[in-house]
Each structure stands twice: as C-alpha cells, then as structure tokens.
Image (spheres, rainbow, N blue to C red):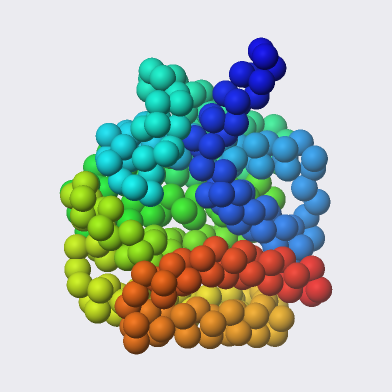
Length: 310
C-alpha cells in the first residue's frame, strides 16, 4: 500500500512539471550540443552531458511547476486545466508544489554553473547565465507580470524558450555561440508564439473565461488566423537562415540536407496555417498546434544530421 501511494505521489509531481514541454526543450539543448560539437569537432565529456541534460530538464520542470503554482486559481476554472495536480487538489497544500519548483530551480542552476568544472570556466558561466535568464523570463516576466495583463505576453515572455539551446550549445563550445547558437535559439523563440496562439485559438473560450488576454483569444477568429499565418511565415523564412551562415574559416555551417528539410517541413506548416485562414475553426487550429512540436523537432534533427555529415 505504501509503495502504491509513493508511486502515485511521484507520478503526480511528475505530471506537475509538464513533461511533454520539457522533453522538447531538453531535445533542443541536446540538438544544439550535438550540432556544435559536430561542426567544431569537439568531444563532450559524459559529465558535461549529464550536467547539461539534468540542468535543462530541472530548469524547464521548475519553470512549469512554479507557473502552475501561480496559475492554480485560473487553472481551476478553465476546462482544459482544471484536472491538473494543483486545482484538482492532488497536491495539497499548494506550497508543496512551490517548494518543489524552487528545489528544481536550485538544481538547474547548480548543474549549469558546474559545467565550468567539466567543459571550461566560461562555458559554465554562460550556461548558468542562460539558465538564470530562462527562469526569470518564464516565471517573473511571463507568468507573474505579463500573462494576465498584455496581449504581448507570449512574445516578451517567450525569450526563455531559446535558453535550453544556448545552454546546450555553450556546454559544447563557445565558438559560434553568438551566430549559429543564437540563430538556433531564435528558431525556438519564433516558434513559441505560433505554437501557443494555435492552442489558445482552439481554447479561446477558456482563456476569455479567466480574462487572460492571449492575442488569439481576445481577437476575432479571422484576425487570429491571419496573425498565426503571419507568424508561421516568419518562422519558416527564419528557419532557412542557418543555411546562409558560415564558420570563421568561411565554410558553410549547413548544407542541402538541412535546407531541403526546412523547406519541406515549412511548406507543410504554411499549408496548415493557410487552412486556419480559410477555415478558422477549432479543428484547424488544433491540427496546426499538434504539428508544430514535431516540426521543431524535425528542424533540430536536420541540424544534427547535416552537421554530422559535413
């Protein structure tokens, strides 16, 4: 009986961290590290891998946990979220979730800065800075400050999405951090609004019920569809940028494998976004939302494969 209760608690706290979100973010960090190590022919030690992956997982889980703690009042009202661990009462008192999130944040920062001992002093310093920025941007800027006040919430509060990429890249090398690394982080940053806006268009009644001014919840479906399509177009165009980057020696960073993958997957995303314009329905926006995560994963897989075959 005791084992069953313990397993149930672990499962509940695991659910609280929103694993589907941090799985993808850890994958982008992994992809950035692999891509950078392939291009600059750098070997990443097992200790660095462990610190980077654990750090990003803990940091992402911490941000999700603490935003869940802050949003527990509106989550209890929204149909989509009322079954989550806090509003459903499966974690009580709520302060336990807050403390759990703070512990995860401490672990993430310790892991990031500890990279200084396994990869290089400045590698760890930059990884720690990016981790700190990601936590502050997600928890303080997005959740505590903007989410319930501004239609620009997911834009100004979405910079944190690129932090795992920068952490993964910095863990591997500082070479190209501010060109290829920043562009890879930009892929995630530009992807986030389209991804979230497609979700909020599908659940706009939920967001309006709790007065959270997500852009696609407060505007008409027609206007929202156009905004989503425009952001998708920007994202697809930006996804081609890595193909035009070069290393310090003038060698192309990416070749045709990445370019063709970005064009093909981008064409699919554009087709889905135009479907949302043609028929701004819950079904169309939900389909775009469901395809957006695999799309980002495909881009990072292409980056890894292309860099491996240089």
